[in-house]
Amino acid sequence: MTSSFHQPIDAAEVPRFAGHATFMRLPAVTSAKGLDIALIGIPWDGGTTNRAGARHGPREIRNQSSLMRRVHHVSKIEPFNLANIADAGDLAVNPIDLMMALQQIEDGVAAVVAAGALPLSAGGDHLTTLPVLRAVAKSRPVGLIHFDAHSDTNDSYFGGQRFTHGTPFRRAIEEGLLDPKRMVQIGIRGSNYELDEHQWAKDQGIRIIYMEEFCARSVDDVMAEARAIAGTGPTYVSFDIDCIDPSMAPGTGTPEIGGFLTREAQAMVRRLDGVNIVGADVVEVAPPFDVGGMTALAGATMLFELLCVMAKGVAERR
Ligand code: MN
Ligand code: MN
Image 1 (cartoon, rainbow, N blue to C red):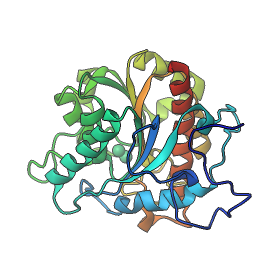
Image 2 (cartoon, rainbow, N blue to C red; image 1 turned 180 degrees about the horizontal axis):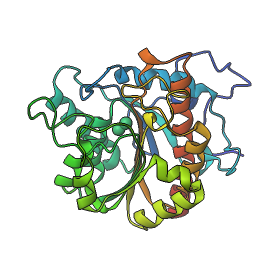
Image 3 (cartoon, rainbow, N blue to C red; image 1 turned 135 degrees about the vertical axis):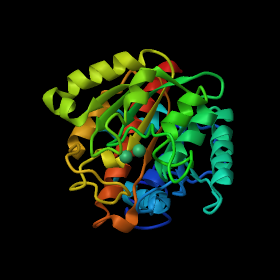
C-alpha cells in the first residue's frame, strides 16, 4: 500500500540494528506539524523517590523499538497507514530544576497539541505525566485509564514536597485536569505507608482495581468496566511499566512483585479500542536496572500497542 504518511525504514532494506535509533524506525522530525500522533521522549526522572534511572528510558526504548513491525498481529491494525506518525524527538528537560522541568515538559507537549497531533510519550518517571496533562487537558478535564502497581495519589514526600512520581494524579485532580469519576487504576498492589492510603483517591470517586481483583476476573471483564468508566469523553492512558511483574520488567525504579504478565498487559491495551484517547504514555522504564533490554522491549512493545489503538481512533474520527 502506498501512503503519503511517514513510514518506518524497511528492515529488509536496512538492518534493524543499523542507523540512528528513532521510535519504531520512523523519521525524526523537529515539529509535530502535519502529524496525527507525535512520539516524544521525556528523559527526566527528577520526581523519583527510590532508585533513579528513568531519564535513560527514551533512548533505550527507541533502541528496542526497532523490532516493531508495521502490522499488529492480532487486531490487524496498520498504524502507519492509518495515521501520520513520526519521532518528534526528546524534550530537553533540565535535570536539576524540578519546577523548570515541569514547565519545559508542559511547553513541549503544548506545542504538539497546538500542532494538532496527539502526544504519545516515553518517560521518564511518572511525574512527567502531570505536565503532559497540563498541556492535554488545558481546556477541559479528561478521563484516565491508568495501569500501575501504585495509585500515585499521595499528597507529599520529604517534608512537604508535593511534586514527586508518587503524587502526579492527586495534583492533576486538584488542578482540575482529571475527572476523578472517569478514572480507573488497574493493577494496584504492594505494601502501603498507611492503613487508609487510598482513601483520598476513593473519596474522589476513582475506581481502583487491585491486582487481586484483576486475578479473580478476566481481562475482558476488567476492561469492559474500564471502558465504561472512561465513557465516550476525552481520555488519557498512562502505562507505568511497573504494573508488569518485575520478573518480566525488572528495569524500573519501584518494582512490586505479583504483577501482570506482559501478555496480559498487551491484551488490556488492545481492549482500549474505541476509547477516545487524547494522549498516552509509557513511563518508569529505568535502563540501569534492566536485564538484557527486556524492560525497554516491554516498554517499546506497549508503546506500539498504544499506538495501534490510537491510530485506529484517529482514522475513525477523521
Ligand atoms: Mn506510577
Ligand atoms: Mn508504579
